[in-house]
Length: 242
Length: 231
Image (cartoon, rainbow over all chains, first blue to last red; front, side, top):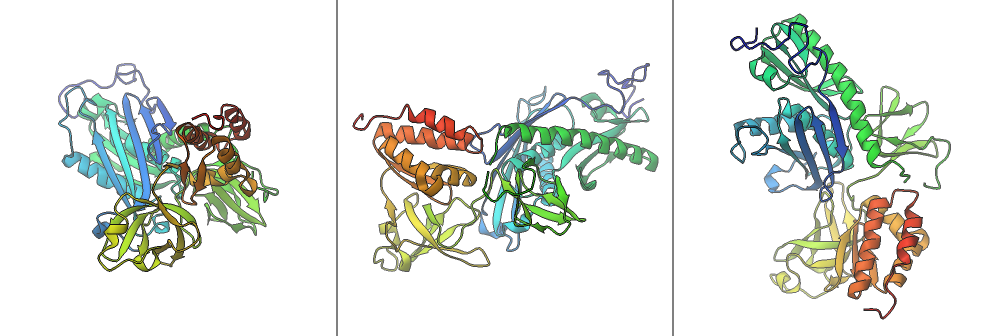
């Protein structure tokens, strides 16, 4: 049974409520360059999640007190649109969006070559248009594609994926019911080419074995999403030759 | 494709993608060496020239270099200097001593205010990325008329063409004055129809400048250029 009451999250045939296998991801679609006014942008659809990320800069960092003499500052603003969930969200910054903006910025800082642009700022805007669990991961994926689209130098792309535990079973890519009523959630930011982890959070409890299995699922999903990211970037400029 | 291409397979790479083994090759811009492998750090086309492997980025920020002719916008005014938005990661600084007028201390605002557009040259860029601009020089001035449009930095060479041939074609076809700033800003000054056509041509560069079909598309657009005296 789930962590909250007697909500059944796995069917008798072993599949999940939406018919997925326990190690199956929701469908992912990515499009790069969706916003002409931004230096780089991307839209990621992950299940029912829809996130748009826009990158502006590098630009002069204002106010000057936020400037770093040896590197650029990544200024991330994650926001959920008021209409992104079934219950209207009060517009504007809140504790949750502030936290997600911070962890996203720290994750992106580990891949962007920030030392190339001292005293400057790279602004990343992530807008969640539709939410169905895992929006921080979708936001990170969208931001990575948008940064690459903007021509920002990066060591690697970063992929946001999550696994979790429902009814004592480790599952990949939690949907809304599994996120709300499951026992654990493990979102991570993975650098697919090196296998490094740029960010990791855990909500709930996982045993070491469960954690390892969840990470195995996450790495498998990250490889799949990475292919879609690369394809989206290549599709944007296909037929091109500099 | 650049003339310097030799040997390497031309392909589109994304950040983190392995280009090939280091194996005695030098690592150029847009790439880094990691565990004996050359890794792309930017979205762009691989290039090998003189044993140096690099990535020609499709998009990139303007990095000022000494001597660049740029179109700058006044961002801040102080008593004795102007801070200029140069469409890059760093602001440029124009001291009153390098302005084309004799400026008294405290009178900088009387000559240029926030939002004014100027044609300037990069005088100096130091190791801390401080950018000093100058407006002393032939043709450097405040731009009081015309319009400014942006193009990606990497398409400037395309827009300019071999020996300025392409931009000269645009000037002739639109009967406008066109100045291309190294910082990705293009100043266009002409009659309404000419300016509109030139903007279309610049937009075409922005959309298709990296494609092999660019030349054909530009020629097709030239067929629709306004006739001289058509305004």
